[in-house]
Amino acid sequence: MKVLVIGNGAREHAITWKLAQSHWQPRLYCAPGNAGTSLLAQNIPLAAHDVAGLLAFARAEAIDLTVVGPEAPLVAGLADRFREAGLAVFGPSMAAATLEGSKVWSKRLMQRWGIPTASAEVFDSMASAAAHLETIAYPAVIKADGLAAGKGVTVVSDRAEALQAVEDMMERRVFGSAGERVIVEECLYGREVSLLAFTDGETVVPMVAACDYKRVNDGDQGPNTGGMGSYSPPSFFSSALQREVTQSILEATVKAMAAEGCPYQGVLYAGLMLTDQGPKVLEFNARFGDPETQVVLPRLKSDLLDIMLATVSGRLGSEPVAWDDSACCGVVLASGGYPGHYETGKLIDGLEEVPPEVEVFHAGTMRRDGRVVTNGGRVLTVVAKGKDMREAREKVYAGLAPIRFEGMHYRRDIALREVV
Image (cartoon, rainbow, N blue to C red):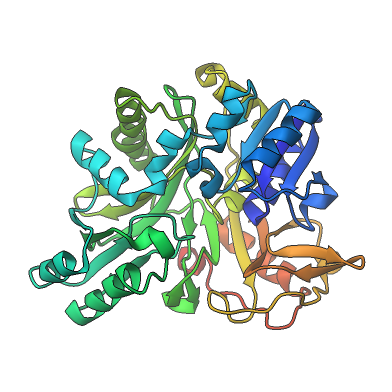
């Protein structure tokens, strides 16, 4: 069994790590991979957006299954190209990935089908958006329509901040073409949680819930990032809530997608706010979340490759999916300056001193002259499990202590609210 994992983040390292435990004993490839995946798989020097190159490689190597990690290749239609070539691929079609690729499309789908979400208006000009900002209550939420690497959402406390956010997106183009249209949305209140699910287009199998931390500094201060850490399970997300979300949001969305002619296959990620009126969708993602994957997959007892093969062949309903009852905590180690400007090429020391019960999933890393150096903003996700969240936190923070690189910073409050 030959499996190709596309991407180079900690999410892809975690997926590769879990696939390596399969009873199939697959031969693994990562494109382009990182210093961590190179220990489990053969790294292939092809970018995740190089659809033609990836397709040619998969054909030449007779790859049995391709797993797409990041969203951009999915939105660009990579899965369609592979399927047209007769190759099995785990991930939604371009049409289905629009659920993440366009927040406007996603919002309108939810409005059409009564899927609970925040009320919102869509604007394609600065003037119309500015006029609307005179009429709304604050705080409010401004979202860029397209892909913005997890940073296209701004919570604004007054009209001046709202105008600045809209101007940044629509006129200054801080997120490029992603900001050509914006959504102005009501601000929801409650606890945030992420619930991911496997789906073959009909059957929906939820994973275990997780919480992530988007702000760069302790206490949820500072700018949004791609995620500074996560933990699973959140104590406030009951099994009854999971059943409700699965039925009213995940299954409802999969049914809506099928009814609209874009059946959804792969991982469906719902970012949720647990409001006084019930769970509501903040966003959908069309793939495994990052950093949630790094704390969800260590809790998976079943064979991930079996689940993926069942998903792509439309028989997920007959595949057992089981989870352990451990707690899992993950902390992201980031480059100095992230999420703003940062330097790369910093030597990473201490990886060999991390205790064996602690996993280190690489993201922005590469090998240079036999040494591991930084190669991105989020560099590593350090993960540990425990019988409860207190033990998992203690393990992960003790486990990351030996790791050092110039400018390294991380949040010290990941999962703290679960133990105080």
